[in-house]
Image 1: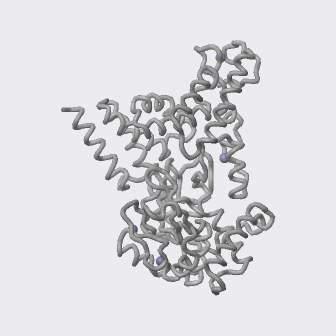
Image 2: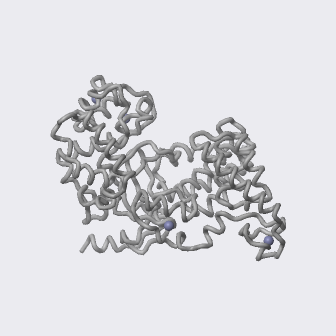
Length: 444
Ligand SMILES: [Zn+2]
Ligand SMILES: [Zn+2]
Ligand SMILES: [Zn+2]
Ligand SMILES: [Zn+2]
């Protein structure tokens, strides 16, 4: 009775609805020598003397992970100095854990409801017919055999397929405070959460701990009505649906994916009439809003800008160059709508590239159009919008634009309190001190 009553309590925006520790997690191999394998902290780390593969920040962290690592350690040592693919290490750790009582571990999503690893969806049927997945699994199986030899811990292929299926469709990327992916994890309870491109909740991390916060008011703790987004929302409905279908095996029918208006706005051209800000479909002969003619020159300009932008952004996936971003922005000017998703993606890349080379004034200039774009596509309560305000405020503080800095840092605080919680280190350590410093300097 007690728990039933508590579960039916209304949830307010900013409430933490779930906190969970990972069932199993793996630090991405590329961070192996700069982050602790146990707490994921970026700091000075020392390697495990036996396998020479994993690194820890402290004796404490090494001790904490020992119960699992002592079994994994000889396997890693066996194939040293090869780098183990993250998914292979994840399968290895999952097999070890499941073989050592992990199959009985429960993750709770309400006070009384829980699930075990084998209760997660495995999508066995789909994977069996998915050539891309089967090929991936086969390559991972080969790595596992090299690592683990004929150890009895290695599951048979059918069992491995179902573990793999649960991993790929329920796996979470653990993000650092800057929202960069640093590790892969399985959270048993949280995996109950469904996807929507218009979510009412968000997952954020403190180390390896996952928190789910409500970003809208929700009637009660009913997991069939709580949604997070599994994917990047800065993509068109067709791209999002394709990603969800191939990675999670479902067709998204959320309100944003079924609304044709969203695709139209995301790909909109600018109206040739400078005073009109309608989202223009470039294939029309004139603007339905102001009736201005769309000339072939306008159409060519739009098509060229879009194609150049797509090519360059694709090529700059890992590192964006400021001059290339600026070239794309120049091509877009007057042809592509300011809220077109490719314009926003370009601004996002340009903003980060300008910060990388300390061009603060340029970064602030890009942020002016970036903020409304993020707000439109990510929504008012998204960690990335909060982080954007935080970065803008930080730059303004260093540029001595103090009143503006205070305003933007307060906006960051308002959003991040909801998405991360007031007690999150991002707020306690970074944001509070920047805000205090801005306020002090502004009143000095
Ligand atoms: Zn550590
Ligand atoms: Zn070791
Ligand atoms: Zn959707
Ligand atoms: Zn118009």
